[in-house]
Structures are given as C-alpha cells and as structure tokens.
Length: 552
Ligand code: C2O
Image (cartoon, rainbow, N blue to C red; front, side, top):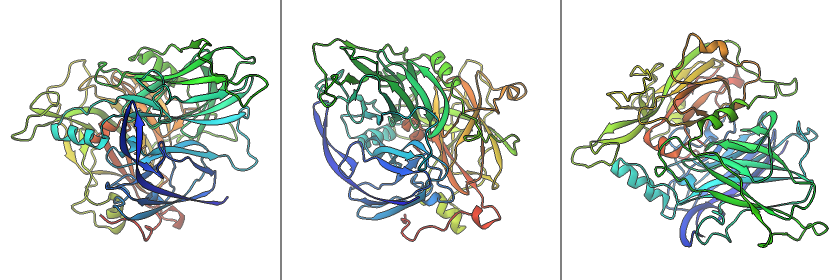
C-alpha cells in the first residue's frame, strides 16, 4: 500500500448550463470535481484549501474512517468548517473496502456542485469476482439549478417552505439533449462491439432517487456501496442519493447501426410538481468497426430510448432492492451480527414546527413550517463540533446523551394523518458501547405523505436484514429477517409507507452522523448522531485530533 496525496482547492468557477452562466463552488475549478483514486489499504491525504467566501467541509461518503472520525467531514458533527483562506488535511486509510464511493461537500447545500467519484481498486493481484471489464467509467448523476443553490436553501429556511426544485438532472454535470440548448452538453459513452464495460454509477443528486436504464441493453449489478453483490441482470435499476452501484454492460457483438439513450428520471411517491420530474439522457454510441478511435454518432442513425418506470412505481423499487444480496462466500463473507445487544426503533419522516411570531410561513399551512425528525427529534447542530466536544470532555451545553430510544410520540400508522405533526428540536446523541451489535428498525411515518427516505450512516456499513410495508411488527417480522446473505451498504431506502431493519457492529469509536440523503430532508432536521465509545484496548480508541483541525 502507498500514500496518495491530493490537493483540493475549493474555488469558484463559471459554468454554463441550460443557456445560463453562473459562478459555482468547485474543487480545482472542475465540475464535477476530480476523481479520487486509491487502492484497498492505501493511505489518502487530501489537503483542502478554502478559497471561496463560504465555510467548507468535505466528506468521503462510505469510507469507513476506522478511528479517524476527524477526517469524516460533516460540519459541526466531526469538525468545525474550514474557513475562507484556511486549509485542513483529511488523512485516512482505506481499510477493507474496494469499489465505488464518492466525496462531497458536507455543509449547507454546497454538495450541489462540490462532488466527485472515489474509485478504490482491489489490492494488487486480487481480481474482481466477475469478468474483468474492458473499461471502467464513472457515471455520476447530479442536479442543476439555474439559481444559486445557497440562495435556494436560504429562501426555504426563511419562509419555512419547500425549496425550489432543480431545473435539470445531469450525468457528469451534463443535462443532455432533452433540455433546452443542452445537446452539446451530453454525456457520451463510446463502446466497441462485444466488449464489456463497468459503469460506476453514483447518485450525487440532492433530492431525487433515480431510475436508470440504457435502451436495448441490459445491466448486470455486481456491487453496491463498495461491497460486491450476487450478480443479477436488469433492464432498469433504482439508485438513491448517496448510493453507488457498479454494473456491467456488454456491448452488442455487432455494430448495431443505432444510438441509444442512457436515461435517468426520478422515483417519488409525492405529487409531480413537488419534485423535478424531468429526464436526463446520455448517449451510448458504438465505435465504427475497424476504426475504434472514430466515434460513429450519426444523426441519421435511429436513436432508441429506454422505457423507465412510472415516477411512483414503488413495486419496481421493492422488487429491485429485494434482489440485492451479499456474495457471502468464504472470500467475501457477510459478517452479519447474529445476536443483538441493542435494539432500536426509529420513526423517520417529515413533520412541522410552529411558524415564528410575526411571520407568514409557506409550510404545510401558513401557521407551520416544514420540519423533519427521527423519533420526533429534529437535530439542531451545535455551533461547535460534536466530536470535538466529546473528545475534550466538554459536552455540557453542547449535546445531551439522551436521544430517545423509542419515538416521543407513539407511532401507529392508520392511513389518517395524526393530530399532532410537531417535532421537537434537540441536540442529543445515542451512546453505544464499543463493539455493541445493533439492530435498528426505521419506519416511515408518512405524516405528510408516504415518502421513501434514503438513510445514510457514516462510519459503518450495515446489513439490510428486512423490510416491509405498513407498521413494523416486532413479534412476527424478525422471524423473516435474512441473516445469511443480506446486502451490506451505507445508504438504504426506508420504504415509502414501510420499514427497513438493519444490523451493524459498533466497532468504530467516534461520533457518527446518520441522516436522510435527500438534502431537503437533512436541512429540515431528518438527522441524528451516534456516539460510539472507545474500547479498552489501544487499537479500539479514537485517534487524537490532527493539529490543524479547524476551530469554530
Ligand atoms: Cu453523503 Cu452525510 O453524507
């Protein structure tokens, strides 16, 4: 293993999309940002320098950060932000992971433009557990606003209403030919007949889960969230914000004399109009036989489009996610905790807060503003960092250690919205002893409507042992849990109108954020944090903070 050094300068750049130019926050002037490449076991050292007028932090989404929570990145959770003109070095080792992950800004809505791929190759000499692809291509989905996204979120917070939806989806920052004046901004994948390609799909969109399909081609899913899965082949897949999916695409054995759209459009159970229901398309084009360097794209060739599911096709989503299984082989075992030390049930969903006096709110009513919570607690981030307060022992006035282990308002889904939709604000951590094995059931409350919530846990992978619809049944549902080959990942959809059960081993001391990866829900408070205590052995303790850790 080696040490890989990167310099990430956070700087403004002018970017033109959808006929308009705006100045956006980028890394090194690139949009999307640079790909970070490492090999399993490598140490990665990224010097981040803030040259913009915003506070900044970066997060290495899905990297386990064993004992190195100081490098995890969520603002006010593991660190104070990097202020204008300052630098901070993120220093971590990639242990026991290989595959596709990604990095993004983790403060306010800066991740709208500040994101990029992380590719972790297997150790030298260790092959993939599937046919080696001819080429590997990152395919990063994003979302573009014509307006400044920081202004969009500020406006939502000021009015208590929903933020404006995006103007386009993008693939590698490109909206594609279905949007006005974007034909030249189209992602193109050039393939040679008969060759197999691995697409490293990353959903970096802010607020939308996406269906993805390539016309007249099939996709074999081989990995999610940097964990191999039992391969299965589909025409269409679903990928939620925060998730990554590696698929193999085998080009047709002959030159097909056609071009093919690769399209993504959102899955949402809420009304169209309240989310961006447009479609981004890239083009798969076959290179001319005999001249592989000359692209064959030819306007005269027919262009095939894939059929995507309806925007609210929950059956499709359930069917797809139920196919995801760990390899569970001797070489890639599924280390599912067999017994459980700590069992938790969290409600997850939207709610309201009263409108402040002398304000008109644009929430669900003009007397309320939108809010969101887990177990009815809407996390308020402190003005210092939780991990620092924990490490220095000065938690008083910063956080409580009393996150409710059952919902504050008893939850029972009846189909009718409850009388009380209010959430409680608070800064409370849920404390776990080192190496506790945890089972957590998360239930969508559906209080303001059925909605799927892609829940992301920092610092761990977890196993998705069960899911279902309606109320979770603590007596009968556990008997159906899959403890043999459940998928292992870092972001899972809590089904709209249903529940999901996960298990993980709390073997990583530190403070670990958990939140809905729909950015609007995180903003409204659908977030909490775990405090995992040190173990007794020296190698079971959180490392000391680096000397350049930013101060608030
Ligand atoms: Cu990808 Cu807390 O984030």
